Image (cartoon, rainbow, N blue to C red; front, side, top):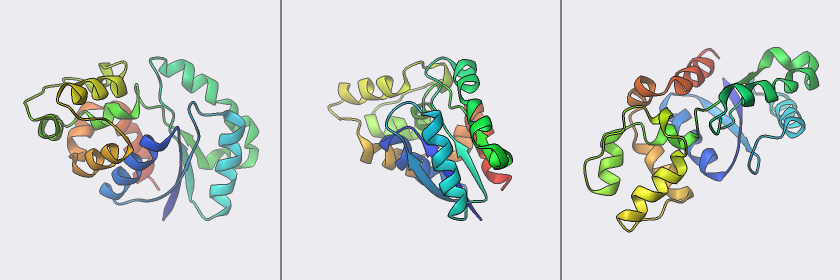
Length: 175
């Protein structure tokens, strides 16, 4: 069974592709540039369903405003009418990079020293945080690195620490 995903950008696309493979799901992914646009997301969702996706999950970053983002995107259900039962919104708290920093072991390997992050969803600028800790050890965070981290992280660690990943996982596995 195939699901459709709509994400915000390149880093999100490559990371979520790897995470889906880890949890045994085939996904067709559409990316937007930056914040999810309601009208474009509806058009993408309709196209993904036409192409055989069982359901579509729209995966925006909360950017420290989870309820506001969820409420803003509810408009999609009105625009997509008869397909609304096959479209789901799963807001990432706070950014998809929150999921990437959830596995302390993998992150420690990348920076070459031990690091402990309690609740990654409490890191309000997870992408900035990841960039900064990598910069301190002479590395740069870019799309290929997002893919590498996603390939190595233990999904069970992310499930333990990120409630938004649990929501995503349940919606994906429900397919």
